[in-house]
Length: 159
Image: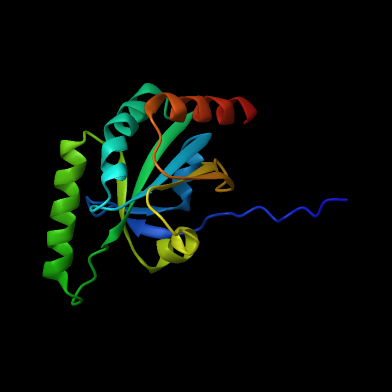
């Protein structure tokens, strides 16, 4: 008799790079959301981002969407080292642009840290989340486009 672990539901509130508020409600926009945790200093992260950008554009958003969490770039908080945070954001924007990873990216904040990054020990780490915000699986490390596509298609087939 196997013990069933309670499903993990992600709840968070954050701001994207354009200052728009984003919460776990974003998961309800697609059957499957791929949440890719990356860092500006992480070469494997940056090298897979062009593939992720392509994947994000190849699916109907009702089925699949991609969100990036920038683990080393803090959300700008009024009065808390705003200049340093803005420089980090600019660097992140520039990396996103150069890798053509044109999907939603969120800088890290306490809410995201608690919801997603508490157990992240390496970047990139990728979570797959269903439309209700339930974590379906976690992948540590970078993958090529074909590997991601196989995984995405297999998960979508189950939903």
